[in-house]
Image (cartoon, rainbow, N blue to C red; front, side, top):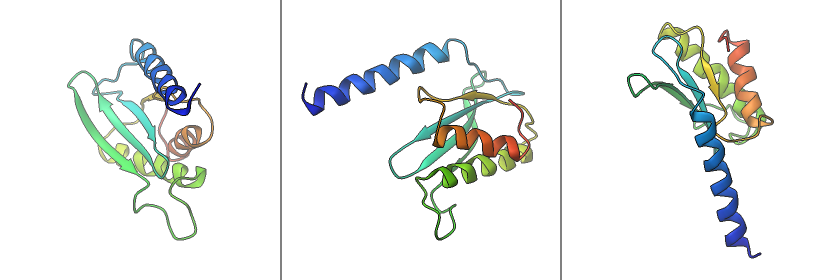
Length: 123
């Protein structure tokens, strides 16, 4: 199997996992969905209300990480989790539903969750 076919299969498998999880995980205005996306260089998190179809707030590792901390690392992802929790508190949100967005719950995805929990979000 060549590299392009393998990559396509991997992307399709993640899309299948996303669709399966989205049937059960729904965000509301009181308890939004905390959605995590990870690229090769950065980590992103959004609070989404599926009822109103809006993004309440978002945070990313772009410009957030101090010097010496890589934006694509677990430490950078933990900072993103803390930042999204602080932004959620400003909006009056205390509890969220975690959406790992088809990724395995380890590494940067788990670090975002841990950082958000440490900063006071409940899920």
